[in-house]
Image 1 (cartoon, one colour):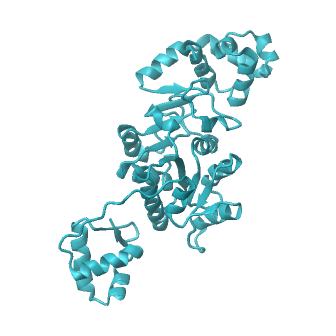
Image 2 (cartoon, rainbow, N blue to C red; image 1 turned 90 degrees about the vertical axis):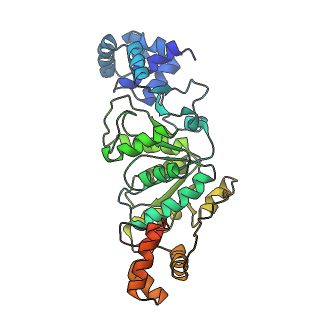
Image 3 (spheres, one colour; image 1 turned 90 degrees about the horizontal axis):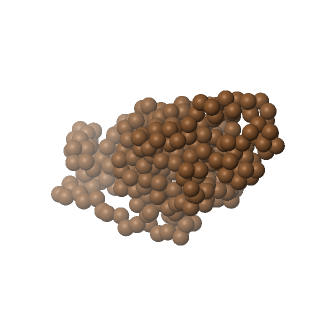
Length: 361
């Protein structure tokens, strides 16, 4: 498509009164965004634009320059892509309210890489949820899946960070402009995604702050961009279930990790299983769905490992444990286990999580 015509879609994107549905009506009526942009009020009304929006749009059009806006985006190193572009992801076109502009910061090629998997869940992540998310994403990412999430606190942030830490690929879909990091506490992660050849993407214009409605809308894009959705932990009112519902509607697999039945943050995955989601106890169950095998894993070296260290390591291969549990399981004195754990931590073999439990690093 001629980029000179395409920039008029930017104008419709910035104008808050016209969303994907109305833009599609305008394109159907006028064939090009340029024609629609320059149409008179009678033509816009005939195309299905409400009269109260037409007056506001005509005023907006007088003040806004798509050309200058495009130049501003270029200076900010923000690119954009529309459904008319040959590189626009086909998966996303299946959305009934497909965005007509995607703003991008980073590696746009990731939009069309496959398979890709959304990994989403609660913002109030538990140690169990963190451990599960890290274990799944490490295997899935090193096996070639692009990890997509929403840059929120909790599961989203852990999914992005784990993918980056193991040299994988990740896409963050925002409920704000691509130049607005939300939450601000994830600013370091935001910068790392772009720096490590990942992608930040949004349907919202540059400078747009997040709103209550922008996050559910963002979730449909997460589902639309991916070949499936994995929910590792979430309550019944978790936004991750909105993402999963979109995946169900699009006919894409939804995977759910079971958690402790006593935890409210396990109820979301169990609800998805009742709706027809696929039980995911291991990452291999997901890889097999996409015809992938787990990539060979480099073995962690434990040079000159003592008998005490080996005993502790084998225990922690099963699950994270508090020091007193390790004492009970090994039958060794508290002082001995305390020294052993300290030495293993110094060697980078184990680490303490936020609950004070030890796990393999």
